[in-house]
Image 1 (cartoon, rainbow, N blue to C red):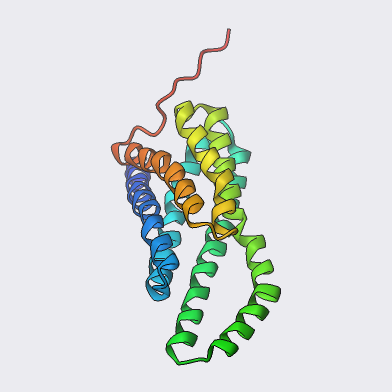
Image 2 (cartoon, rainbow, N blue to C red):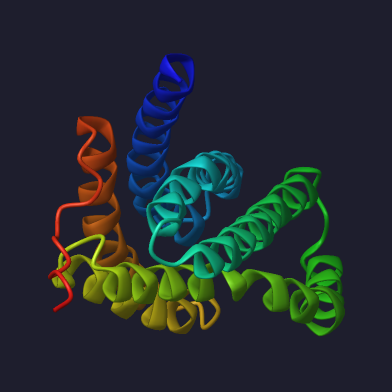
Length: 206
């Protein structure tokens, strides 16, 4: 039992660090993307989603006692959503490589036309699962009272705005969505590090 408790505590700390680091990498990723530094946008983006998998799964574990089914569903959405997000970031490497190799603008336009027509629709299906996982996680935190209402609300609002900015390629909206989501995620990450993940008491039933 002691070994299990130690492993659980270590897992919480790792999840907290990954959650904070992964969320904070969103801002530079978006900045590099819109400033044309595609290589660094791809690097920061891939690292961000890789870190967010254990980080977000750490939050999902908070729901196990009071909403076990929802915890499992959220975990699946997180895994699929992060893979989808990472795939979008990996696509930036291919665009960067093509431009660096001296591909003509006409050829780049043709490649982007095919990509937007055949590839992006597939990626969007998986990519949209990431904000869906954040929204579901926010709902779960609110329902189980595993976090203050403002934490769940900010996470949910950020998740709703997320596809508008990222899929719609609107930089300002992307930054707003990221900021709204970063604040509660960093707060939750700090609680995991401190070992006090559940801070809102559920009233006793009469």
